[in-house]
Length: 119
Image (cartoon, rainbow, N blue to C red; front, side, top):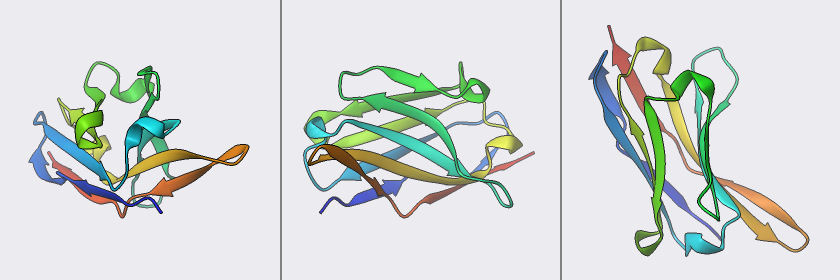
């Protein structure tokens, strides 16, 4: 069983920064990939950023140049550095891990952390 625990959310003024952390209960090096999703009120959950086992990163266009995803395998932790935040970034942010299972994979989710950007 994989547990993911997010932290680092909070209230920040527009233009400010936050760093989210996602700590896994097991070695993340075996994961196919990890990512950050977000869900704003009344909207569907969307992918924000992800990082593959090989270290390749992908970010949604709306956060490119502002957000960075990284990981520390020794700490079993993935980070999302968020700079130049604006009100559109207000959402609950969820950590995701894609874990190999048999011939496929299984998705694990954290409980979410609230990010609120005030204008």
